Length: 232
Image 1 (cartoon, rainbow, N blue to C red):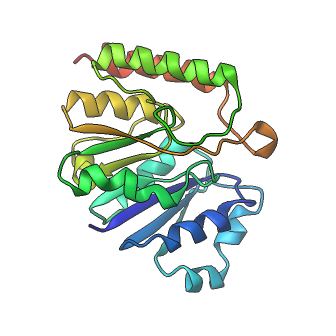
Image 2 (image 1 turned 90 degrees about the vertical axis):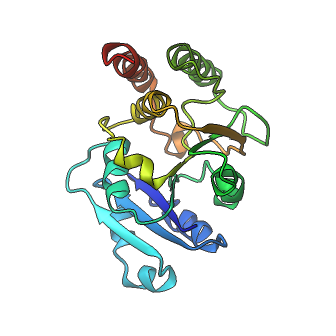
């Protein structure tokens, strides 16, 4: 199965080359689709270097002329994807491409349509913010109550999908609301959903972390929007 690895990028000049090198080393037939969401820190200039295309031949880079958010970047990348499995890969080194095998195994085995990589099942993870962790668990709990799923990590940034699902699902959210939105829509379609344990190498705000408490409030609204206001 060919992988389409979608990498939304915004101001990640310190990590973008390293993550692309790690993805390129994975032993799968693949295409790497980077969507630069109007970076202003030099990331865009790095991606435009001619030698990058020579060293990473599976790479394609798409550009937003206005910053729109992670969900919008994913929407752009998914439309352009041609693989059998779509993997979402953040550019900040929090998730390790060497674990693609774990993430896609249930799909390749014919067991799953969607796989979430959970930071809370097992595996090493960096110890960071208590309130972020608590907020994540509250959002996951609320999402589970409406979707009737028993996920441990709805907000994970590591997800894999059969590409054909996106003929039935349109991403509407432009920012981090993508996570509760896609979970509600996957549940509504009664997709076969699996969770697998992954490692998590989190970073703090001095290292470029972008999600804030405002995104948590927006995620709560999206849980209600896509589960209650839209109906089941």
